[in-house]
Length: 189
Picture 1: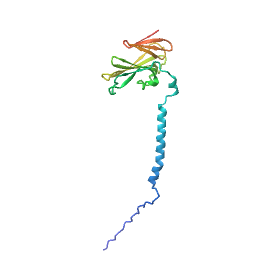
Picture 2: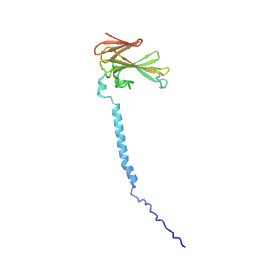
Picture 3: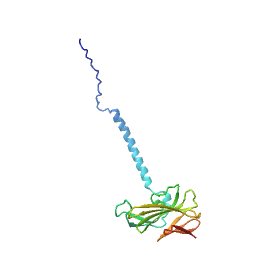
Picture 4: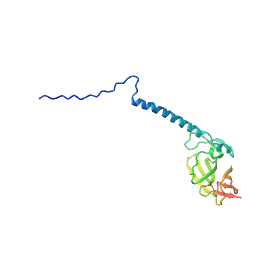
């Protein structure tokens, strides 16, 4: 008995021809311009976000801030924080959701090694009620606390005019007043 030997048909591998590109190479050649165009569009979008809007350019700062060298929690020694009264555009992220507080301006003060960021404005659901959100950060321990204070009278949105000692001077559409950090009380005239 003889065994039949079967020969497997061998498929021929494509032989590269000079001057021809394979399908994979064509795919990469088509994808590269799309990647470059996408990158350029992303860069244009990022640079447009860094430019101040025309609304921010019209709002002058109420009081110019000064720099005091003080470490902020998590920052290396020698980091600096701005203190003073600032428009919203210079204040960074607000620690209270927009559904709770509509801020008008911001103040930063240092009292006994505690950095206080004070956000003045009105309550989102009842704009006639003024409100202050005070974020306190102990620069020694790094502990933070956030408190929200509402006016008992419908005076409208609060705007910070000055900070002197423990007293915050405020203005509203209906009255002028103060907020005492020691007693956490509003006083309106």
